[in-house]
Amino acid sequence: MSAPPPPRPPMKITVLSRSASISSTKRLVEAGRARGHQVRVLNPVRVEMHLDGRRANLYYRRRKLSPCDVVIPRIAQSINNYGLAVVNQFAMGGVPLVNTARAISESRNKMRSLQLLSANGIDIPATVMARDAADLKAMVGLVGGVPVLVKLLQGQEKRGVMVCESLQSLEAALEAILGLGHNLIVQQYVQHSGKDVRVLVVGGRAVAAVRRRPRVGRLSYTLNRGARLEALQLTESQRVAAERTAMLVGLEVAAVDLLDVPEGPPKVFEVNSSPALAEMESATGLDLARIIIERAEQLEAGSPGVESSEAWPTAVPRRKRASKAEG
Image (tube, rainbow, N blue to C red; front, side, top):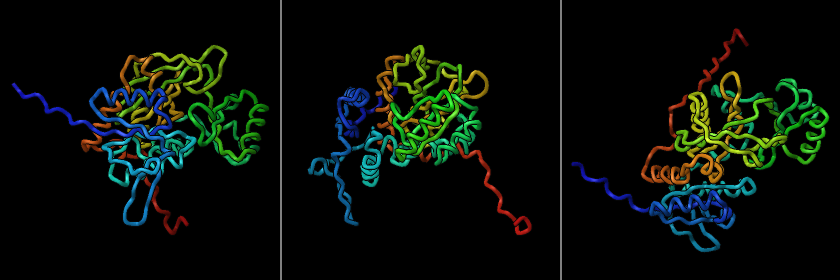
């Protein structure tokens, strides 16, 4: 009879979040403590950083931070630049991260992430981007015509997305948003699908999925605006698309949003690095916070992160150099 495995030593976990009262943050704290770990929540904007060319130090409200074993970033879009600098400072100190600053930044720029996915053979909705409202309006035909989705390039999950149902409403929206200095993209809106799919991927593996059913009469297109979530059994094509997307972007924890297209492969339209947990847990009955804590344990123990994985090589062949005869 084999001996039981040795008890897992407790870890010191830092969750970077604006508030310990946020539901997803609370769930991570509960799950970590339930597994015997010490868990602290730090507001990233209260973290001070010191560099002098020889050493790098972190302070919290002017007191030097005690070391931790692993960091779980939950960086809000409103503090993106400062928050990611804090995440990177922990990484410079050799602390394992559940989502690196690079991967979070990649997911936050919608056009860059879509470019990455498209270049690697992931189906996405037709998308256009330009600096001028007239150019964007003229390019609407390339995404199938109205209605279309208009998204702020650096918009938050709960904001920065609208549906324009006519060219007149599109023109007004474009002029208003671009006039405020915001960059945006215009994206195909798949009519009559009536639903989309959110997949939670942890450590490169799809662990839960829900189908979103919007409220009757509502065109709002984010998962957190009154939609009803229902647990979903993924198809193989949905699972592969979600897992490949998370690995290409480099996220250990990601919510991958897919358009549930009646015909053809699923289309990835959004990647989120700080997904809401409570709603998905309620719909699926799964302890998703525990799964994330378990992944943090693996990373602290030396498990390779998805950023170092070579499981999904790029699908695009390198272009040949043009010969002198061609030039």
